[in-house]
Image 1 (tube, rainbow, N blue to C red):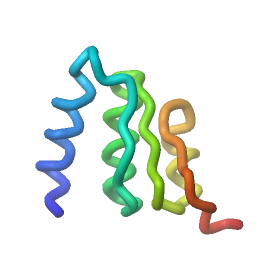
Image 2: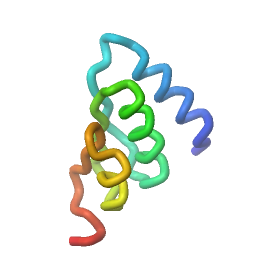
Image 3: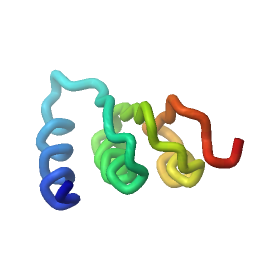
Image 4: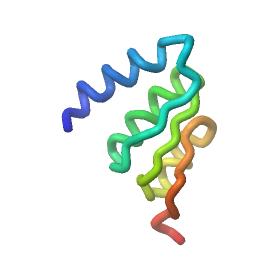
Amino acid sequence: TDPKIASQELHALYKNDDIIAGIGFNDTSFAALAGKEAENFKKIFISPGATSPALTLQFPTYLFLVAFGDNA
């Protein structure tokens, strides 16, 4: 529930060369944190529950949404 800690943990996760992708975060604001780190490290992030279409515009290369978008 702490964005600062989540961002630090995402950074630590994605800097590991053995990690090629991450899955998680249903909340749009936390998915955005994950998208930022994914873009920085050029690794995939998949959100199973975030629905904001703005996320895929903000992080078009490495962030993917599984759920429908709010604009559907």
